[in-house]
Amino acid sequence: QSVLTQPPSVSAAPGQKVSISCSGSYSNIAKNLVSWYQQVPGTAPKLLIYDNRKRPSGIPDRFSGSKSGPSATLGITGLQTGDEAHYYCGVWDSTLSAMVFGGGTRLTVL
Amino acid sequence: EVQLVESGGGLVKPGGSLRLSCTASGFTFSTYSMNWVRQAPGKGLEWVSYINSPSTSKFYADSVKGRFTVSRDNAKNTLYLQMTSLRVEDTAVYYCAKDPLDYGEVTALDFWGQGSLVTVSS
Image 1 (cartoon, each protein chain N blue to C red):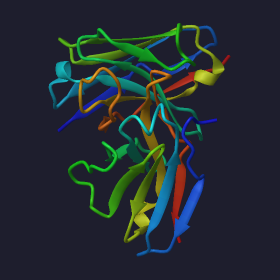
Image 2: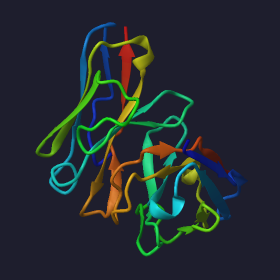
Image 3: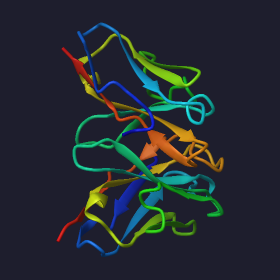
Image 4: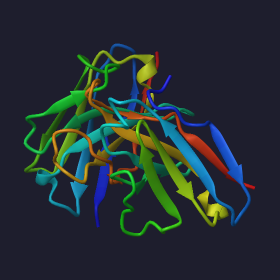
């Protein structure tokens, strides 16, 4: 049981947009900075979003992040087949003194 | 180019010990916090441990507290994870991951190694 709750899977057609939610609490998302990671099976995770909404160099602006209270959202527009992967949210939990991840969301581009 | 290369994984019996290493290059290792994250087969990501640049602040997941010890040698650009009293449920790919800051807690994980598989089985 993860501290952060994500939908197990989402799907959409190429060119469409999708949102992945990440639900937490006051001690983690509401209080600290959220990051998002993309993991293609068999490879290491890659940072997509940090500080709630910032993109590292090289990450296209099709990827966006937002936060409201104890919840965060990853948005992906202009879906491509190459976006098929697992997506994880992560954040520091001030009560646990630990980083916590969501259970992951599998994105299928139909 | 930032590179993180883990080593030291392998097969170990329950109750055994293992030490993982992560050799860093392409950035000033001594000025950034570092982390270990693991992923059991077919499962999601689980954060394991954090250490700040001067090794004065360390945090652990409850699942490994008292059994795992994180350390670093800034002169050798190397991060370590000493694992003792290993259990079957510790079986996972272990990743080292760099923090973009040295803040005293995890802010994000901006670069990851390729991972090292640890298998705990009799």
